Image (cartoon, rainbow, N blue to C red; front, top):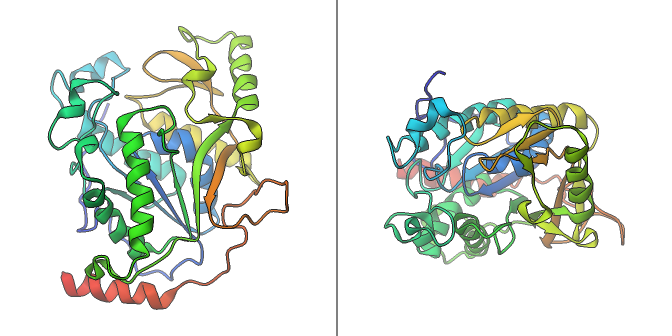
Length: 335
């Protein structure tokens, strides 16, 4: 397998330079802990909005250096051997973003600024430089710079438990929510751009009924996995009535295919088998073609009692060009 070089980063942590194309009227920011989290949780959503011409920006908080490696031929990348998994996963993420049609993907503070903290209770939690040990406001300032530059109307991240209790997921939630607050405060770091308030914030989730049905489908399929995951193994499971938005939409089949391709790109972390996948625990899970969210900030664009089918529902078409031009001037002056 070809090794993946780490892409060059701009001062704001971008994996590739952005062109001078007109600013899209819809702008979505997603904040995730490790490479692969975005594809599993939001692959359909990202592919859909990228295809529709929205600006989709992904910020990943670590390179996932502590992940377990699935393919035996890549086992040497592991942290207890060559400790080169992080740079390799940067390349996997770039391939996944290409599959989803997303050009703007960045690492918080730049690649390698924060190291993967390992699972909760692991010794790596206490390592200096790991994301779990980062002061929240310090890490949030890096994200404030992105928010004030990109000026997204919609932010997607995890719930307070990070979906399943991983330290980096919990910290990503804290940093994302704090950055949304700080970005709107004019007195906070004016050098990072003009104040900007995000209109809608969503947390990833999955309705329990869909998880139960999906796991039943894995069991019935004669899968090739070591076993089948339990409901508690799936992050972010909530009662069905807690879900406020569900995204599949027109062209969902193509978007689901893009999601599967993006997940396959994370070869060290995910084994995809048709409509199912497994992580390093080798337990089969459904590859969901519809993705679900809880709106925790802002007004729903759906009728009472209905779920949104568009995260931008109820948001106007303003491009906020004045604020974006101000941020551009500040960034240019700082270079």
